Image 1 (cartoon, chains in turn yellow, orange):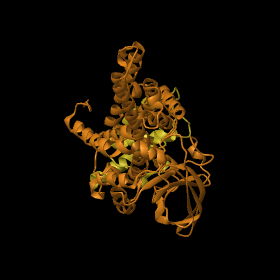
Image 2 (image 1 turned 60 degrees about the horizontal axis):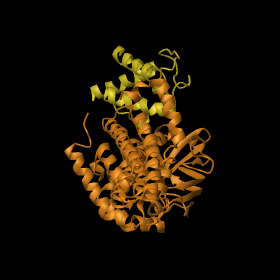
Image 3 (image 1 turned 90 degrees about the vertical axis):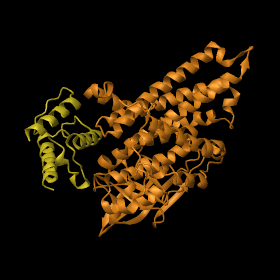
Amino acid sequence: MNDIKEKVRAYLLQSINQGKAFTDADDIFELGIVNSLFAMQLITFMETKFSIRVENDDLEISNFNTVNNITGFIQRKLNVITTA
Amino acid sequence: MVRIEQDIHYRQQRMAFRKFAESEITPVAEQYDREQVFPAALLEKMAAEGFLGATIPQEYGGRGWDQVTAGLMYEEIGRACSSARSLLTVHLALVAETIARWAGSAQQAYWLPLLASGKKIAAFCLTEPEAGSDARSVAATYMQQGDRFVLNGRKRWTTFGQVADVYLVFARNKEKISAFLVNRDNPGVEVTPVQGMLGTRASMIAHVTFTDCEVEADALLGREGFGFISIVNTALDNGRYSVALGSLGILKCCLQHSMEHASRRRQFGNYLKDHQLIKLKITDMIADAKATGMLCYNAALLRKEKQANALIQTSLAKYYAAAAANRAAREAVQVLGALGCSEDSAVQRCFRDAKIMEIIEGSTEMQQLLISDHGFADLASIIED
């Protein structure tokens, strides 16, 4: 879990580094530091980096809006893959 | 990194696309551009070659080609005719690929074989009288009534709207923007052909109006309320890629015609190619062709590998390619002189078509906003990838 969170945090820091600090619990969309196109970029990053597939039913803002939520979502996806 | 231009597999595919374009499109492109009608026979030939389902998985009847191969197809078809390339942009890139990405399994099983084979042609209905670059301001509405949706709204400048069998339509219900696949023969759909456009004159543009248009629940593409975030963004990213490569094709067409003419025509006792001011124009076109190709092929490889920065690299390629195509077309007309202004000349068509590339799938100005903002956030992902 920590490894996933570190990769997610590092990617967000690298991608949206506009001098605005955010915690693992901050909503990056509400902070206004990303746009909807970044959501697609983030999905592509998650799929490629962690070999998961984001499906229609996964499209809930609460899966993508904070470092904690993104990490939890990836972990749940990986758990499904592992137990399948 | 793989050099696309030198990879034997991709070279062979490029030559196959070029052979088709030179034999089936180039000889008739000027004529159907004048007539403003895309030939049904050409559409059928493109379908028979598998172009309409180029990137659709083979299990759905597509060719399953990778993004690099698709890019070469856009480039070579776009080199021959932007109207033909625009068919691929709307049908394949904007609609079919988006269905392949976000539709449910039942929708994919139904739509993808029809689209991949060309039995159904698809078009993209986003633009409205008051919603262009500001796509979020779509005014078309939908309401849920039982297990059906009812759509109302006016869509404008729908490429291949005249011949499409199905439209990917964006509408809002208060703050929610959703996407729907609407059959043309659905009651409440009215199609009005548009003629006299500046460029891509054979792209069968239409205004499409939806009046109390009822569709089944399974017409909804993607999740309700995610029409913009997932569907529009995916579709326009795909579309930008096709337009970038199509612009590269325009540029190379202009370069080819300029060099052929400069090698043939003599003025003041010398071939044009021996005049220094012509050398300058040719040099700029060659440099632009190389630079544009590098941006486009870089985006192609990143897309093939599904890298996250493929989105911004695609925007960058589209931005540069559209501008470069305009520079090349402007200079090509100048090199060819009166001949370049003739309706029988490919470069006059390129001159008009190139302008369209700076407007569609995110205008040049929208790309500038996007690229600049992205640069401030993460310059390395643009410069170093």
